[in-house]
Length: 133
Image (cartoon, rainbow, N blue to C red):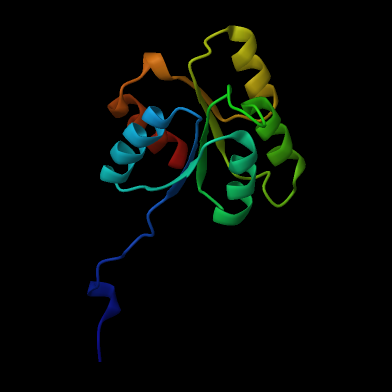
């Protein structure tokens, strides 16, 4: 008879959907997030982000605001309007730093507003840890 209490518990890695139209950002942050233990799904525009949020069911979305097809605000609206998706946390991850952009994003349900230029990968990882607690 095995004693399961002595077995280490395995937790499923968290999945992050990174939505950005800049290939450099996608590649750089995907690598860093995966090295930190996250599973990363990439979306290259807002329409792809909405589709992947529906199919990949990420634990968190990092969402750029300036993207083709649907911008980040439109993605936030679409996700929050869908009762099956509305509980997925979305953190805006953008180079826009106007207070009005942050206020609009938070008003649409963003759980955090991160200005890319203001954070290092380590800062981002620390913020993600707080979001997942």
